[in-house]
Image (tube, rainbow, N blue to C red):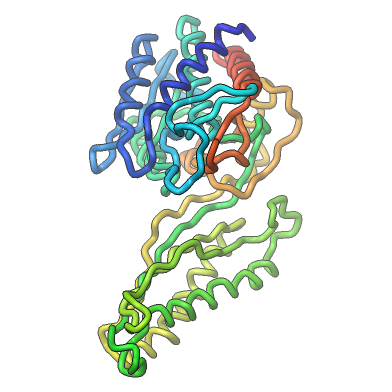
Length: 387
């Protein structure tokens, strides 16, 4: 691998890291930079703005306008840094001991930088098959950008056949992952003085019963673990991540919100959890609340339901990555990605990218320069699948 390509990748990655594209922020300045870079190479580009107008997906194409192309995809947003103990500015890339430090270096701007450098090398080739780059928004908060992009590709009649999603896997080939369903359940009760709890409806107390029931379903889900499941753990899981409620210790809590998630290994588990919870709410705790105060309520809001990446008996994307990496086997992971959305859009999909998921979302996030090198080597071999 020529050192100039590694140096160029580091230069681009440094610029990408400098854009603080936390999911709550706009990503438009980064998208403009990437768009200008790829447009100068001759790419055909369209941008798809979010409903709020402050974010955008980028979809760039090199080669012929035909079906059956290959997509290299990654998300542009990163998780927050507040409350984390960084030893350097998270949005200023620092090179030290063979590593590149900064928010997003491994998750997943390192892969984006590798794609951009590869695009420069491929742009002048006589491609007989299109290469697409898909850079999305809001993966970290529900994969909203990728969902919108799949709809736009269908509307435009763009039909790639294989997608490589460059999430950090240490360049291992990943052919399957669990789904990731995220919810917020809001409880509305009746406030009152803490000295007379029977006269109010304590939203926190009912939320606690909901949580106990929800978490208790983990045992049921363990018993439903599919035979031969390769996931760790092999069964579907539910867990509570955040609770917000109440105004003070001497006030009956009038509201409470429970943020929770489910990671199903099979769609039937997700349906069972939702049905079980609906029965518990409508037949048990909600009637008790409304017996005291009719205005009580419980509402579950769907934040995002991202289907898992299903292991396919035949997978063009997996075969392509095998060919360009030399791998002869694939793994599955528990964390979620956008890959399932590409699969739903009738593309074969696989995950393979530089860096380790163990570094993602943590302070002092980094990517090994050696991982950048291995990724660039993989992408350079991709040329053989396009010409």
